[in-house]
Image 1 (cartoon, rainbow, N blue to C red):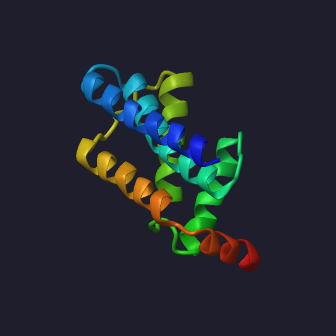
Image 2: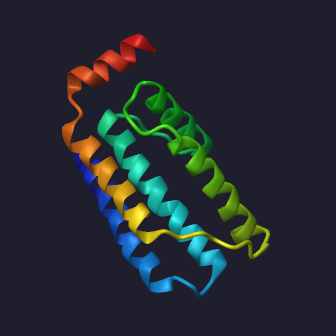
Length: 132
């Protein structure tokens, strides 16, 4: 699972670079790229924890659990929910809603998740599982 975590983290970083190149061009692609950058980073963490989740809403709920356990920052699940809804509106319903992009904040988010992945211990993971 550590290899998959690394691959998803690489995908988040690659998506961040792509986002930098499309800023200001298309709200549909901006919101889709922003959301997947966040999602890939969070999914990398899930892979590190040994969790496979193919349903975005389930992934967000697991992130909410990780918030409650102090693993990720409070507000991470809400950020994912909001950006997922914005992506759906712009990608599927073509609403062309404006997208707020703070490239530096997004980069910092990916780096914080990377730090968690690199420092979380198996003991901490077991502790969370047992506490439910």
